[in-house]
Image (cartoon, rainbow, N blue to C red):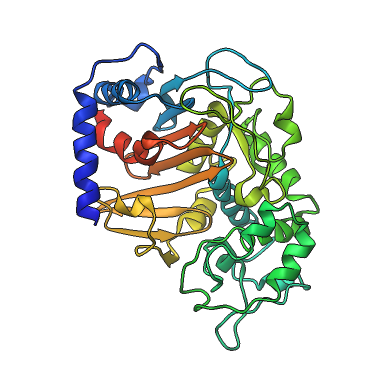
Length: 385
């Protein structure tokens, strides 16, 4: 099946390369600083992105590439539409990023662990005593790293429906307490949203802040992410907010679910914000995010190789794991730190290669073919000169 997917991907790329460039997208390249040589060749990527627009209409999107700690490439498409019809999409335009939000919770937990405020091996019940959810391993406890690596042992998406219904967190915790692990805790992977959001209660307990306040204090403010937020009120009347829209430009209804569990999927951010985040998690802001905390977050903990998700079918992927809020993908000897997200029709992708120091972040107003392959497209077609 992976071979078939790879052949399809290659055929699509070949078809895109043969099309004429479109004038409907705006390409804003940044200059690579002289101290980051070698420079990069984006000509093939330009051809692919412009040809993709020629082949089929694209939703609004913002794409940024970071190399060795600097933004070196940006491309935008579409206009701001919705409550405030505005101008073209730019790096201040705000999108929802869905499950890319999970990476913030994983890194924040690692930061607090480095400060000895928590230990990721602590039982979750130490911080949420009313939680009665147990490990499936006799004599063991459900631990912080279990919830952050989707290895609770619960069935996939257990009680995600409660989050989508806007259920208060106390009732979500009570519902989770009624469950028994199906699989082996700490060994078997099954993606979660409700269980993942328990990290918010842990962080609130040790910081004395709400999770949103902790995000603002420890990450958004320190990194200068001025448009980033984790609630609906922050973007409801913001003229920079890109409401969900079809490829043809028609505006969709905005679903506000997951703002009650921002760690699972409730962050809003602009491309400029996400580029700052990408630079920091790639290790170029050690004064704010230490290498030790990042190493803890990105350590592979649970195998996801048999998960039937799109990234496992990218050409060249040989193995995949989950860390603390992050996926780790192996392409032979190359490794990518990655996560994707989808919420209320939005799609987002973020990835970087720790060795080459190349990273990509992309946000879309709805899913499309490009959103599924933008990560491998960048890493296959951006070349060093």
